[in-house]
Length: 144
Image (cartoon, rainbow, N blue to C red; front, side, top):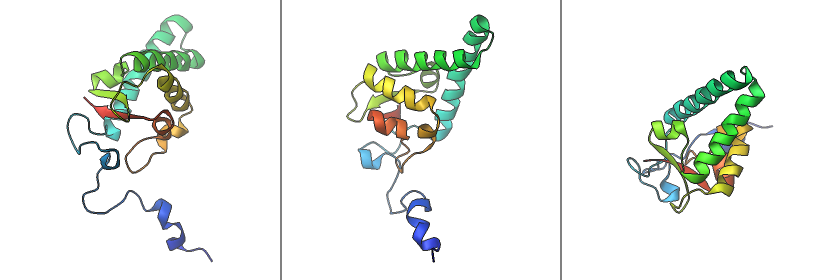
């Protein structure tokens, strides 16, 4: 018979050992510049990006949802791939970088964006608060 102890390894939440914080396993600081972006900032940045893309879609494509998603994907690929942040990221002081701190680059931005647009990879994350889209692209969203 299966009981709670059998499932606890994957539903018990983040590690609780002393000194653990998101980003520690990646060598990032606990707080301040270069620390992992927290979920609240991520969600607000996403809302800003989506709102901007929806405005453009409404103006040129009558709010077509496919057009909005396409504009969002284009924004993410171009801006994250070139300058490292989208409009929402910049407004909230966030940046996408490779694990070593180098710029994300176009290829990583494309991989990250395709998975971000699928939604599920973005909401499944690890103890370091990196979504599957960031893990696949070998990137991390950090504070500026």
